[in-house]
Image 1 (cartoon, rainbow, N blue to C red):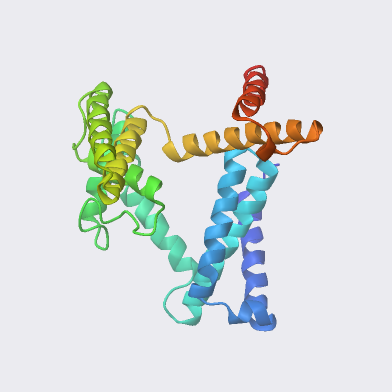
Image 2: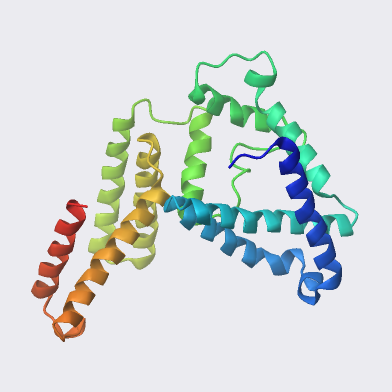
Amino acid sequence: MKHSRQEKIEALGRVIDTLDRLRVECPWDRKQTNESLRTNTIEEVYELCDALLNDDNPNICKELGDVLLHVLFYAKIGEEKDEFDIAEVADRLNKKLIFRHPHVFGSVHVEGAHDVELNWEQIKLKEKDGNKTVLSGVPASLPAMIKADRIQEKAANVGFDWEEPRQVWDKVKEEVAEFDREIDRMDREKMEEEFGDVLFSMINAARLYKINPENALEKTNRKFISRFNYVEAKAKESGRQLKDMTLEEMDRLWNEAKRIDAIK
């Protein structure tokens, strides 16, 4: 279903009007602050991510609405503080998009998406209120895996990168070897440090091969859950509990689940 530009503007206006009324008349909405909404915002974004990963369009639509509500809510709080409102949020976003796309709104020529990525970090450094250093734009509160991916992506965009993707595997092997040495010494602190280096290098490898490590790991999580649930269900069908089964018996059911996955 497509809506006209006017219909889209009117729909957004109705939500703003509804929120304005809720902020006055609803005790729960009235008492909310930036701090109190923060955890709810994180939850809503994760729910949107689940819908995106499932390619569940009805839920993507629903969760986008929930995220939009939070954007409007923070803007409303900013308006009440006489700091900014949703119009300023939108205007600043629009100016930023134009400034960061000189190949569309200016005379800069690019050959493809990679050139855009290379220009992006340099442009952000030139912005009046932009990043002061290349890595300063990476939020400190990002989950560690996403943060590692963004750190390495930003470094690569200014030329700090391998010349060929295959070169990264020497680094991965080096980090695995260093971790292995610390296992022999059983120094827990050093083991943790070196294991972090292994993960960091693997995330870098994923980036070089255009793999999203967060998505890749989540798909593996879901695959494991599906197969483990199959093992548990089969155990129950036979009147047994997993803790009473041998590893060999569970492995047999696990391999059954793998074969089922392979033919889906």
